[in-house]
Image 1 (tube, helix red, strand yellow):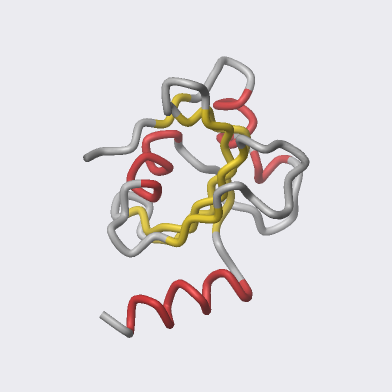
Image 2: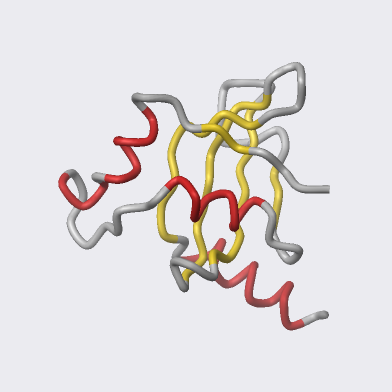
Length: 105
């Protein structure tokens, strides 16, 4: 089953313009996040332990279109749809965890 993620009119431009706010950041296209959240090797933290929201989700997955791992933070509504809050190129410990998990397969 495919996971659905929606980006509203404020959140989509936010991730598309990350490089304007953060040095060395990569701008993220919303369709890339759909690939990441549907990656069969993704790492899912639900609820996201780093969020104050009980319906928060953090996903680390690979986007083939972007040719990189992406961390996606979203809120899940009552219908199960994810609503994107932010996303960025995955680095550091989450990247290592993803690669270690993929190597186990």
